[in-house]
Image 1 (cartoon, helix red, strand yellow):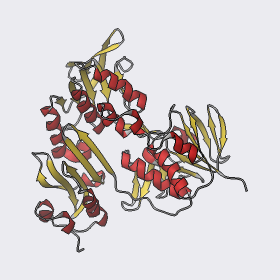
Image 2 (cartoon, rainbow, N blue to C red; image 1 turned 120 degrees about the horizontal axis):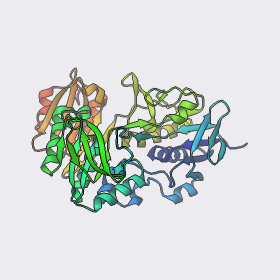
Image 3 (cartoon, helix red, strand yellow; image 1 turned 90 degrees about the horizontal axis):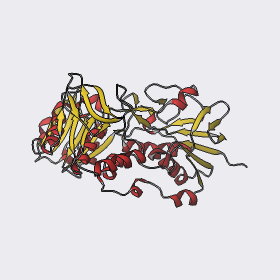
Image 4 (spheres, helix red, strand yellow; image 1 turned 180 degrees about the vertical axis):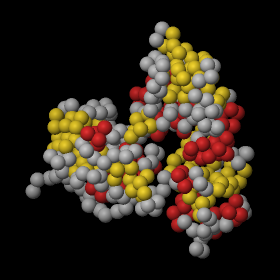
Length: 411
């Protein structure tokens, strides 16, 4: 009996974990990975963290070494771009020829939004998605004594700012909101990050808009605000969010709505086609609606889970969103549902001013999100409170004398 073929389109962590999981769960079919990048699948979050800061070598970003793919009979088609998907004919067109498939996973991730105003084409403007992007930016930052302007006060924007300061550059961060990360952690916690960066010499500007990037002889020389003020710049980093790479899915007629729409088992609207990772808008049984997540933990966990689905296992994916960041002397983990946190009350356990605390977002007496700041070995308990949806006493939650393990344990 001929082996079937599973094709995975994508070159990130989700693709790597999916093929690894398939082999671990008994898939003996032919597996082919198609990625337009010129290297085997790798993790992108370290690019704005340890790799950019110079703390990690490039080899640390690969979840699987080259030998693993050979030893497990997984074919890598590197530097190959998928151009068209035909779900009815079960073929994938690429710039290197056509590929037939029996099951196909789309794990194409997301791409950073570009600044689209005047000056967008100047040299010295950086985006951060790929290893070459990160290498170019790291080389520029390592020179030191540069005037760096970061457009966007997102997680990536703040991580880039911290790395840039570490190399001795002058850094300005420009954000539209009243504080960095307001959409992710709210005004109070966003203010904590603003204070952290200011203490380390970053000029954090809030509630500002960029109207243009000015250049001389084709190269960046300044960033112009809507007020007319110009901030001198030798290089600009744009960190204003990302959009899912749905082009392949859209042209194939798959249902797309802020990503490729799937059920809780990663099945798209086309038979035999699955989607996972940043590109997938997956039905979440806990929330009762779809959720698209762009963080490392989701890329990892959804890759493993879709691999099990492709191996024939029945499951519903309901991982709690999780992410982390390290900036200067601050380390943080965040778990939970940001959309629910928008309507929740903030309960702080510990000392927020000292940046050593756990912040909980409590909605209708239940924890919907939690963030531990320079407090460690508590994430499992934070996730337990979120997952069990147990009713809690906010006073006990805020009391550092009450062990987290005791809160809601009897329920």
